[in-house]
Length: 302
Image (cartoon, rainbow, N blue to C red; front, side, top):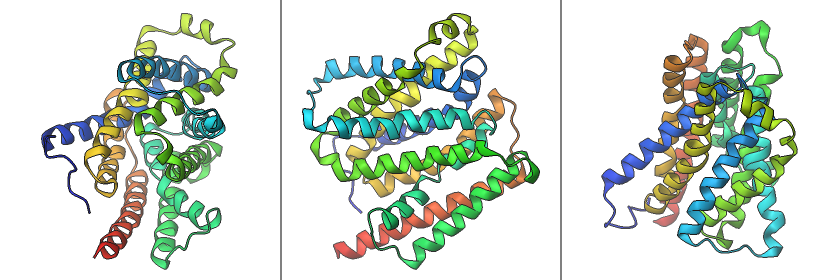
């Protein structure tokens, strides 16, 4: 495992950046639930990323982000589709029938689907350990979905949250195979802008919903656009620039309990024992996946 790459950056700053990322992404499910009180799922996704796009445009001007190569436009739109358009529309529709706490757990199942993609799409070798982690994680997913509203009320909403996780895993796979073409900030900017452009199909009717939405919903949506969709990505890029990926991703396991705590205060949600138990199963399985990867990297570097 690599140490911090630059001693000039205080560990305190890195810890604060990690905490900021967790708080932002932990807020996201609650913000979505509040936004859905006045917005349709597609309109909510579009407004959120119009705000994020405007914010990232300011950052791009200040930091001097370069223009993309024309031949990379299909890649950038593919990244935008999976990371922004499909992911967030599916997430918003899914959260119409799934609690914020359960949604945050299901969204953390992305590494499980990344493993399945690695095996069946990219034909990578998958160890017995990783297959066991995937199976355990999927069992946890079923427990969370069933525990949200009871075994008899399982519907498509939970599956849409999983579709959002699958979409995110495809984005990660594409990003991994093409990240060398641009620096992190440039790739994030163009991913957000491309995804927002694809969401413009939801533009009709957006102005009416903006005008009619109550103030507390507007504030929640503005927070969604600025914090989880823009500032958190910049903070995450800062973390990844100074901490190796395996250590940084351990931070993400704090997101579901953070999301549950925020939803408990803001929405009055009380997660059931099944959701808590399923969450532990999912997070343990994902943690086990990452521990195996760290072991492989350490052995390979000896």
